[in-house]
Length: 393
Image 1: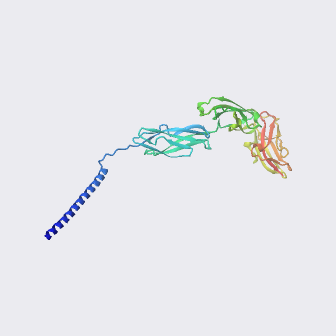
Image 2: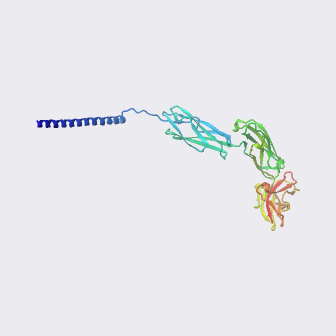
Image 3: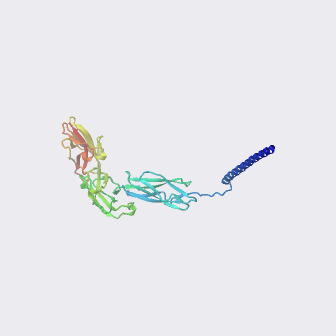
């Protein structure tokens, strides 16, 4: 009996163990098959894959904008059109700009095929140079155009603009005179009017006359944003003193001193059949004799030569009109000489010994001593020579 019971107990234990083992292997086999099936379904070569398409960038209006002119300190904006002409979605992202005064605004940064958007660039004219050029850079997923820039270019102007921006008279015969025309464009409020044009050099103003008239703002000039336009004329009368012309046309407005208006610079040189030659002390372009600092104990002498050609009267004579430093500087006309068909007349400059102190440093034309040479010929008018001289004890 005991043997039978022991046999049954062992059989029961073995049966239970075999049952658990079989259950374990069945469960393990089911898990491995599920994972394998998922992996196979994800990597199957026969599963359908949808083509996402390719983005393609287009800029119908171009990538640059020429704004012409704008007033210094002002601001402007421009809309650039960006279009996706590809077959897949296109993404846009701003990556930078050339300076803080240029700001790009994206209305939409994802474009489906066939869609377009605008990118607004806003800039402020705060640069010191007249030429203005700024840009903003963007990134896209177009494989042929992963990055592109949008640019704005133009010219920064003051409240008043001149064309030409300076008047160049060139070399002109002093006894014939000439005239030059110019334009003045006002970019201020339309109520501000030009009331007068003035010559800056009072010592020569009698030889220069200025006139102007208001005219319509012409389309071909490139100044469509100007509030007003004026046509000016500068006339140089015969008899203007020989030598360099360096002065300015000053514009007066109805606001008087309440608005700053830049001057229009004028350059040129009045010439005749007389040429001045000198040594290292003479600057011919400026008609400037640079004597420098002289000790009154030693004194100083030098000469310039008037060289004449052409049909001049036989009784030609020159005289000196010394306007400054009359006691410290003595200027005299020397004896006429003839050399190779040229008439040469010396103009002698002397700082006498024990001359009184004088201070004409020549930093600008107002700080020079003036010497005027005159003749008795209508073709040879005044010749102004400026002298830079400092006499010390």
